[in-house]
Image (cartoon, rainbow, N blue to C red):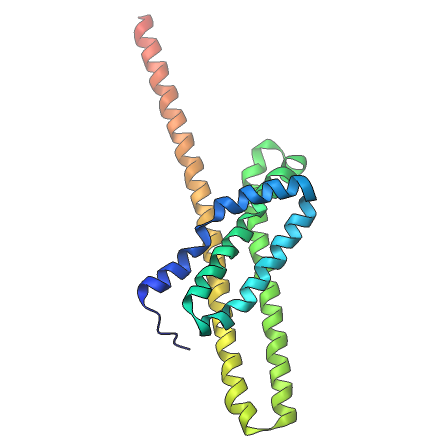
Length: 199
């Protein structure tokens, strides 16, 4: 399905999840202190899955609806960061916390993707059964193309979610490496200055 969106709209759709990501983390931290980690984590996952399900339908209406849903999706996906930060110290040693965090975020993305894929498969099966039972030319002409378009759009949304998760993981690793390099350089400079001053 070609939505005929210009490159600016496509760029907004792809970058929209990061617009309010920091707000999602902050809001989640406040909510988890009042409602608990489990309630906030489950609610965020359900909301993210629901958004991914309605996005293909909204894409047919207006691209700005898709941008709005992607912004809310970014809120929900980043809502898990404080929860993971609260739970992981109890389960992992200090030296393994970064790796454990990255694995947890990857698993969250995979769970959301699996939920969306299962729902898409159920919808496709229902449509196929309706087509077989009805054997009506209207059903074949109207329903099947719409379902195919919805499946394609859901696949694109899932791919974008996976790419965002991978990019976040890479950014975290790069930031850690840069911080370690800066600390090492500062320590070396301080040692050199102290040695020179002591001579």
